Amino acid sequence: MSKIRFYIIFVCILLCGVAIISRLFVLQIKDGDLYRARAQGQQESLREVQGDRGRIFFSDREHLATNEWRHILYFSPSQVLADPDLVDFVSDLIGQPVEELENSGTVRWIVSDEQAQLIKKLNHPLLNRIEEKMFRFYPQGEMAAHVVGFLGGYQIGQYGLEEYYEMYLQGESALTRRFNFLNLGDQYLDFEPDCGSDLYLTLDYNIQFQAEQLLHKAKEDWDISGGTIIVSEPKTGRILALANYPSYNPNFYGQESLERFLNPATQKLFEPGSIFKVVTVAAGLNEEKITPETTYKDTGSVSVGGPPIYNYRQRVWGEQTMTEVLNKSINTGSVFIQQELGRDLFLEYVERFGFTRPTGIDLAGEEFSANQTLRRGYARDLATASFGQGIATTPIQLVTAINAIANDGVMMKPFLVNHRINSQGEIYYTQPEELGRVIDPRAAAQTTLMMVDVVEEGYGSLAQIDGYLVAGKTGTAQIPKAGGGYLNETIHGFFGYAPALEPAFSILIKLDAPTAVNSSESAAPIFKELGQYILNYYQIPPDIGK
Image 1: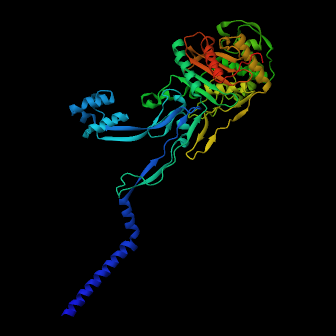
Image 2: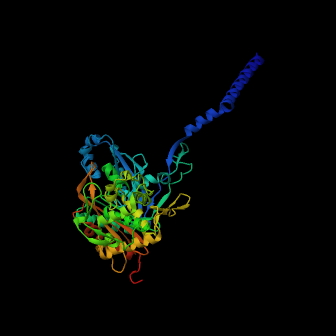
Image 3: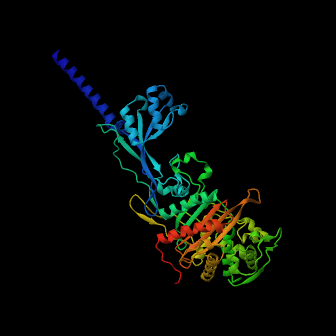
């Protein structure tokens, strides 16, 4: 019996061993990959992580856009109101009565480091959810807001540089693993994704600040409804300042209307008025249809179909040279030059100077007008366009066009980003880009000297800067109505550059609906003040007497 019992026990043990080995074979070899994956899934989880967004700096490394960690408090106003001891605390915390948020559901509120410590110290169950989150922050507030744009609700750049350079600014997206054992908690033991590239602008903080202050002063002095100042380098296309009034604070973009986000310098068309006479004169000189000394007799008006075209205040000037046409801003003189050029040549120069295409500036959503109405070739349309009415442009188009005259006839593409640096420290510079020769150096030099005469002897005299030759031109234009015709309001403008013979900068001043009578009274003095500041800031020596 003992042997039979032994064999039975042996066989049972053997069968159990075979069963265990078979099961281990299934678990470890046949289905090993499946169970290994299940075990790993219990030990770790995946999380998508985004590298920090690239920062944006002025040329002198002042921050224009950066990233900051902020504490976010989540709470339910209805629950807070049910606890009388908590109401005053939360109201003081958010700076407004909790009752105003009663119907808001769960509220997300940014709190300071000190406030976060107070909340944690209070340790109240209704205020126990605080987390840290990276936010896009614009330390300059309204300054250069139309240039920078903002980071939208879906963490995508909108408007300005934020949108245009989105592919470079956004950080790399990657999946990282979190291990849930050995008390590692929330440690992420995989790699950190690359951050976005930092942008270093051509904008100079000090010049930008001065330009914006002058626009605010223009609001006080002339009650402007809007205004734009652009400062640039004619020889390179670098934009040194781009200021608009009114502006907005990109930190609180949700409080603004969509209209406020449009950049008036690149996205809003206007008629430039007499500043455009510089283009007409340059075209006539380049084609040798006129010289600075060419004369014609002004009778105060000219008929080209439809009502007569008059000079400003219906002045009659008699016999005038082309230099006098420019410095006295005589409308009929511009029409004379346009007629000397003829329809086809005049339209060719409208295209050459870039008034039918975008400039290509590195800002999102640049607008332009193809000025197709001029293509109809109606004599009156061409005549009025010669002195800047009935032709549409943006401020940046106008700057790019006349900068070509300051740059010996060569047009340069405007740009705002000097260079970008990626997370590996690699630097990518923006190289100045020629858009082509518009006029020859002789015509450019002649036009410049005629613009100097405007400042020395003509309507631009209030733009004179002691010790320096300044080339400039005033412009006062009526504002067109949406359905045709013109409003009683005007736009005042001044474009100038200095030193005139070796320009270090150019400035466009545009003032919308000022109470001043004309641009020589409003825009020209602003050019003088800003131009004097830049000459001193750059330490450019006086050039008169060279």
